[in-house]
Length: 355
Image (cartoon, rainbow, N blue to C red):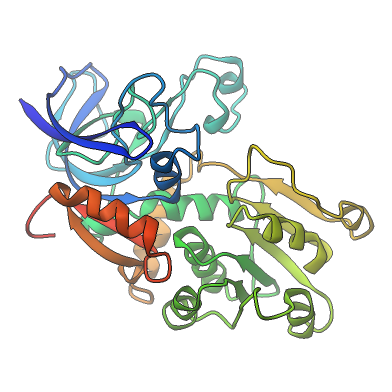
């Protein structure tokens, strides 16, 4: 059987090629793909700004935000069946290395397959995908394929807030840096908990999405407003009790300790690896702050799917999607995601006419 898949050969070298679908191993499933989102990390790999995409090992199929229908299962598969609608985790850990044996986040596995970033783990930007049963999850009947493709970015935000004994409650004053897809999901999660939510975002289009779709309490333009002054003015002079940094920018990372309340919790999601960022770390000491990095979403897909299913009547997650493209038009989809950040948040590739 043939599959038309996208391949990343190198910076700005994205090609569609027809390939033979591999034979299923006993623990694998074959998925007919329906939707795959373009993540900011896909864009960074395409531009050559990130080494996460391993085209140095050979061309690979991108796409770690995907959803589709199971059309075949391996002989040892027990939890999924043909006809199930599924999505899957990006970090496929080995479950054998010392990190895995200690139960540490599978994103830190020393022998992993990262779906959508490596030749050994083809992603969802194609017609078919072979997934490992243990990293794939059913979506409920009230969720569409497109919503299923949003589970991965939502789970990154959900894990950053609730993972490793994290929490958010009605008593929190939350500040979210960035209103891209993950920032919008983080804001949604905090609002669902009844917290006060402030979003810091320089792009007006994205600020309006946070206000109109999520219903955040306040947005701040960091290029034209003093973030620290505005935050303290809107938190009773105390500062933010929970901060989720989704941009990875020097300014966003540095500002977290400035705007934090005493005993505040700071969660870093935005990618900033490869450079050092000046930050007044003394404030973390004298405010007693909890600073925590967060990568991936280990064991949080089930929780995230349940959350999205239960709140979908109150918020339409598909409104975070600002463009739909067919697989044949994948280059235009990447161009939109790269060149039009003023009007693009989540760009979605669909593989069937009905989507």
